[in-house]
Image 1 (cartoon, rainbow, N blue to C red):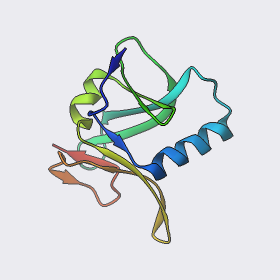
Image 2: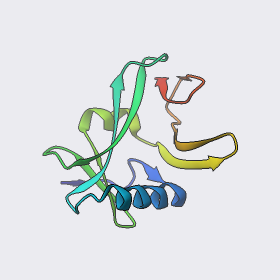
Image 3: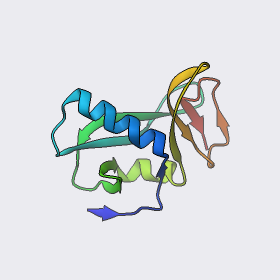
Length: 113
């Protein structure tokens, strides 16, 4: 288990929403929020977000009792990212604020470095 609290940040709104969904999904304590990056999307790389169990080589971060799991490969692309949650009139959902992204698509779900 690798504790690295400087890898990413979660806003208070994101943490509250994750806790809310976690409660609705009725996941056990062995589950956490998995953040990742996969190939694809209109800009080359896409964000992945899900509930999952910890894997052997994951980076593990904890934000107000929310465990976040990030695989080593995704950690390279997610370093410095802020996960936020927006619930305004212009849309609702998780937003990745990535200072390392050279380009992002219009929907904000894919990026390139």
